[in-house]
Image 1 (cartoon, rainbow, N blue to C red):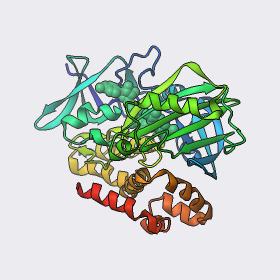
Image 2: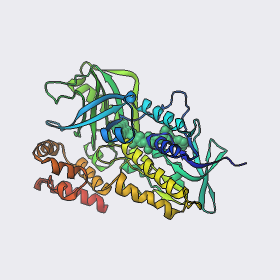
Image 3: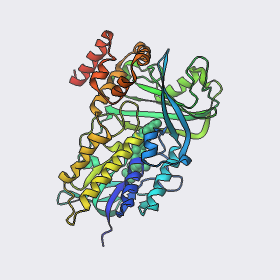
Image 4: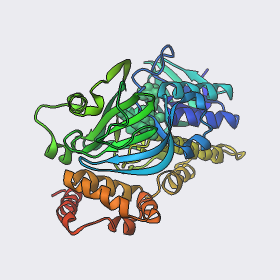
Length: 410
Ligand SMILES: Cc1cc2nc3c(=O)[nH]c(=O)nc-3n(C[C@H](O)[C@H](O)[C@H](O)COP(=O)(O)OP(=O)(O)OC[C@H]3O[C@@H](n4cnc5c(N)ncnc54)[C@H](O)[C@@H]3O)c2cc1C
């Protein structure tokens, strides 16, 4: 006898676990296969700083119990300046958040199987009919969802995604105590999430300090190992060396110590999606990839993609004659482009331009942001190309030319 579910989801990250939660709530028979063991879950996948905003907290009813610290401001730092924007958010305890999502799904009836590494799709008549996991184990479903993040074992084999190495951003962070979050020479970072643009510390990327209460903070950096990184990189230094270099050179960390066992690392792809569904199959979260390219907000985006996929499952399986064809499931692609990650290509352009710009331009950017009206800032943040152009200076021509050359591959 074949084991069969309405939906099988690979991966219990924010995207997969949220999708299971939504589907179980609608009484679908859903199975989640997660590669890690349940004991100590999550370990390798405990990778995120987990800063998020109130829209995510309310849309997905995220409880206070998984919040380390509520924040009031977002601070942008450049080598010699900073810009403060009032925006409330929350820094989550990522591991607790992941376990809470699993518990929520289970409460609604979802089945979880840990120690279950998904390796390949089972194909029938040219369509995915189930998945192979843990070597020889098999399970079948009407619809299969890949939510394994950058691993993407199903989406890659079905040729749905095309995650490229030279678009892969890598990140590492430590949790520290003894951090001077209100140092005289810098912005006040109490109850703030700070992102720093500075090629000396994070060549071709950015670094961050997210206050987690009292004198503790999550401190990390990320970059894409592409042309911009190579231009500004220091010889022989890897990502851990950059983090150590920052900790050694910034006075805010003079009395700081690492909190044992609290180190997080991971990767995500900053690139346009190839596609995200086919017959009986959808990819969600970082598998697509859905993460916001500019500031790496992947949790809320991933959960939104999960919700769009769950709504699409509903539309496909509710009729008396279920229709799981590529055409029906392409509703998910439309929802992704309109609701989950609107203006994704404009945000990708902003990201590339930002990381190509030199350090001096970052100081100028802080001054520009202070002088830009709130409405325009909102338009810029939503990827409005006209509003973005308002931030351009004549001196940006070389950066724009470099961007154009990269686009054209010359
Ligand atoms: C250093 C760092 C800092 C970040 N900071 C933030 C932040 O502050 N705010 C924010 O919003 N986002 C942040 N992100 C991004 C965010 O963490 C991701 O976008 C988000 O976790 C993606 O969720 P996901 O469910 O798509 O994938 P993942 O979180 O990658 O989850 C995938 C799950 O699938 C499992 N899995 C993998 N392979 C298999 C397999 N073959 N079979 C079965 N299971 C498998 C994994 O164990 C994991 O549980 C950060 C990322 C990194 C790396």
